[in-house]
Image (spheres, rainbow, N blue to C red):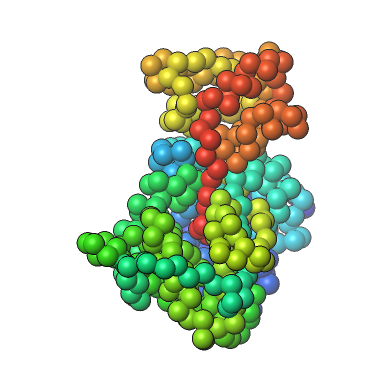
Length: 408
């Protein structure tokens, strides 16, 4: 199919029906199913809030991508992030490099908007690795019997059920996000998206998945310090999101779950991969699984590095970065910090063999702390002739594992 007959441009608001039609086809949407209607409603809302790009064949949309404006916490620094979603191409237009160009154009747009990092939920991890993305967070799913629900004595705070849009929910999450590496700093787009799609509904099609919320309040001053989004269906309790600012709040919210013991047979839950959920249970012989969740990509190396909170005030290091897609990231970069003031510059378009050699995808998982420098070096994802530089990287990168509990 001649590519010269196609046009890449922004999708107009009056063309949103084509955007939805392509999603319907690629994801095999069945609007008679509630979860699919929720999916389409969410993507329609996102279309109005983000930037949608597409390839057109004689005004017919054949391939598309949507970029959403978000913020994330990276080791305590708030970064502007571009979220990628609604990716799809009609099969007859595949294998012509259309999505490759759409991703590149999206990265260029993010760069121009000052977004130095991008997140996405992958439908294919190998595919997005080839585009410079890498795994940055895990998700834990767990299941416990009613007899395994924990109960904690001497918890004096009060849990109160509240509306799903209660102001205290956002207040608690904002404090949590400011202190948790990797997380979304939720704007209205993120809050609206968070519970549009039911995680559990995909597993239990046709069930009534009415979402409810509860907040834990401290006993002394009635301050909100934890919350729970949950569903009760088919005589089971489903934890959508449990966020707490104090250990007492965690215990109080689990006591709230335990109070439903006579109503349910099991608790199903999901949480970020950094949560040692089984260890925290009084009966740790619960079922749980750990899976890769979101992926990240560094969009623009220089501003990303210059904002990064390195672990030393004074250092110099050179990185030789391979990025065949975003060529502005391809080459050897010199990073210098003097009294905590970080500067980065590209000193060559070629890769210096004496520098720390790394791909853009590995750099994402390295800088976000998902895997440590020594391990990445041991599996040859970092190539460096000097062990001293690997040890320097260990000192420079904060020892925080990212947690991400959102979806878009």
